[in-house]
Amino acid sequence: MAAPDLSTNLQEEATCAICLDYFTDPVMTDCGHNFCRECIRRCWGQPEGPYACPECRELSPQRNLRPNRPLAKMAEMARRLHPPSPVPQGVCAAHREPLAAFCSDDLRLLCAACERSAEHWAHRVRPLQDAADDAKGRLEKSLEHLRKQMEDALLFQAQAEETCALWQKMVESQRQNVLGEFERLRRLLVEEEQQLLQKLEEEELEVLPRLREGAARLGQQSSQLAALIAELEGRCQLPALGLLQDIKDALRRVQDVKLQPPEVVPMELRTVCRVPGLVETLRRFRGDVTLDPDTANPELVLSDDRRSVKRTDQRQALPDSPERFDPGPCVLGQERFSSGRHYWEVEVGDRASWALGVCRDNVNRKEKGELSTGNGFWILVFLGSFYNSTERAFSPLRDPPRRVGIFLDYEAGHLSFYSATDGSLLFIFPETTFSGTLRPLFSPLSSSPTPMTICQMKGGPGGAPVLP
Image (cartoon, rainbow, N blue to C red; front, side, top):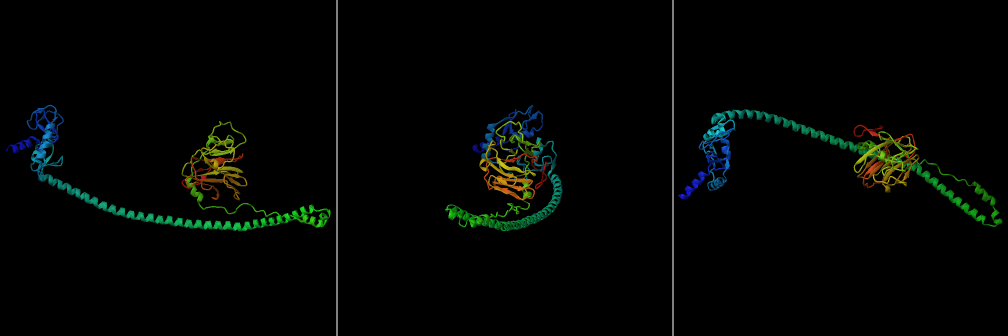
């Protein structure tokens, strides 16, 4: 019987006198009794001493609690030897007594031992049935409130589902509008394209035969002149008798030679490339561009707002630097582009010459030769009667534009120039793989009282440019 007694004694020594369960984090009081740390903390709930030992009632002026680690190990051994049996329903897990009361402050079921503990001395403890009746009333009120909330939630859910369906119909309707409008726009653009191509073909059929007829007539005259020249050269080699024989007829034929010049055809196309609404679309990518005075040639004068530039006949005393253009009459925009789409417009007015475009930020600004794409320049030059670019020269429109729009699509390698007056295309560079940083370039080329002015954009997307 010694082994069962030893096991029983171990179980008793490892049990807390407050919770009647195995010790959890046991601590020792000054009087030498051991309790769970949480149990004694609850018993000594008052903020100030003295504190009475729950077992011997000895008073301690302070909470002097020392951890008892050997007892904790012994409690763990007892827990392994005698695991606590499951607590039946309606029984206190701490004291193994029936739950017969209810703490209204902690909202906990209590047994008689719990009710006597210091933890609930100041709490309102009620009989089980009274507390249950009161809780039932509160739960019924809560149920009434929750049912009302459920009705409102169902109503809101129905409204939300109706709103979702309506919104989905609106989105679908707008989607059909977008698809329909763009389909109509595509048809209009195709029709406009066919009309422009037809006009261009008609203009070609109208002018090209006349040019070819003039060229053929000149070729025929050239052949006749060549034959007559050969005849006269041969006659000059003959002796006097041969040279003078029928000389009258030869001289008459020389006098009858009258060169018929070709018909003068104006080298200006009446048909221009104009896509309806394109410039308005490009204005969505407009940016606020200003001039960089540190790059301006000494002959260029900039306005105070750095939006206008004109060329004078006198050089200003400006410090020379690698950033300044000289001798080229150019100035760069303050903005730098290394990605994205950008659009800006420049008022050139009735100027007889100008140059616009972009260049790499690291170009040689002391360049004396041609500003070509190989040197990092993509510019369009207007010289009164024709346009010139780093790619080719060509005749201008019948009416040169007073305002020029420049569109840069960096990733697409696209740079194009438009007449912002009527939306027609002036010139487009072949697709280019841009690298590095690009900057807008402006050049008045010649002296004129009319400045080149960067238009300041106002309004929302698609807003028209205005002069500052």
